[in-house]
Image (tube, rainbow, N blue to C red; front, side):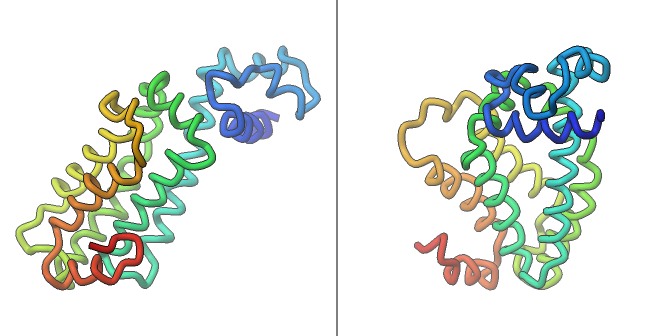
Length: 200
């Protein structure tokens, strides 16, 4: 029952956002009482924390699949961060908005729990990109990934672009994608020039 509650709660958090999701909205499709939920979880925040662990484990699995694909290193990085961006600002935008602005400590805990796993995929990706001539040889993979993540977080998790009225994907292109392009050798830049989503 605990796993079923987590699975349904994650679906409902995604549907309603976190602030608007109540325990009553959760128990309705399960046909259980609120008392049953509180038997397993002391609070909505504790339930959300468990949901985030499931969510970020799923994201790691997606990342791993991308990392093992036949794409070159530049395309892999672009696909990974575009996929994350489409989640943050796609159909589940309210969920990620609430998560980023109201529950950042829970998100940090979930990310930190899987950080080592993410590094095991992304650091070798950048290292391979260097070895294959897509990224400059002077690049430090850890610093490069930290730079990308910092720029990405400035869009999704800070107040800086909260009230931005333009197309937020333009902010992503001008920060994250320009940074990734800056890692690239002429061979890597050629990938950008042939990319239908990032034409000069």
